[in-house]
Image (tube, rainbow, N blue to C red; front, side, top):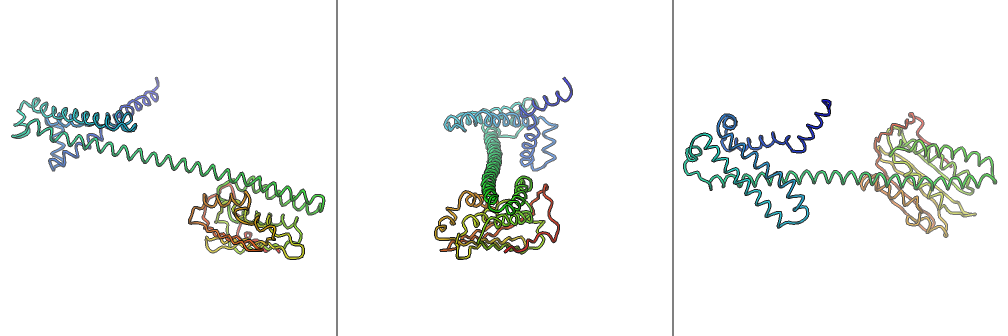
Length: 384
């Protein structure tokens, strides 16, 4: 057996039998002795170099035994199974036995020192005097240890719960994101397929835009947060793609920002509202059909507005509750990613229009796989 293996087995044995707790028990009882004699040096001297060390050892050993019997035998077998009567009876028996054993320590100390109990501990001392000291002390030790154990277990339980909740939210976010991606890809492919026969040049341009969109989805948005300028470029490509395949549609995309490379946003949050606007925009032949998109920054506050006209047949389709899987997903993701305080969403539906106003508080989230665009290349020109 090599030295490392021997050390591991020794450590495992010590941990199994709680021998590493011995210094803690010694310190615990030393503090009580210090309080009793009101002198730390005198307390240490009496423990180390006098017959009182026997009494001290009795306190350490039997109170520790009572604590561990309670924590590792009675609690899991009786208290945790709601067998309260049996637990109370057995715990009382353990405490009583430990206290009586500690009382024996007083008599053992007097016997070793060759003095009578009265001479050793003072006149008037007797069994009931010693028992009146040992019993409350043992009850206090057992109660303190049980309280610490419950606090530790509660802390571990809360930590496990938080970890499970975090893993659940991460899994749900991934599911929502992956659920949304095929939905958007399906719509884009349909748009390009429609243009192949009607306008090959536009189809070619659309395919180029679609390639940029696909590259963004596959490589740029794998992190939980991406640079805002990347998301703006993604929106620009999406708008250009929609403009290529739509007729009789006025589109305005206004972006007013300074350098945004240090600010990050959750991917696909903004796009869903833009996609919803194009999906439910009116189909008038003799009236203007409009999609207006405004994006601006005030410090770290992102203001995002999407407006689209809707026709009579499209009024129900434009609503938030009938907005399809994409819009419902983004509402859920906003709550999961930004909580209740870092975003506000206002949805207004009129007789012939639908508007979404989103306000997000952006942060400096790190996305190491993405290189921010240099200053001067973040603002997107208006598209009309």
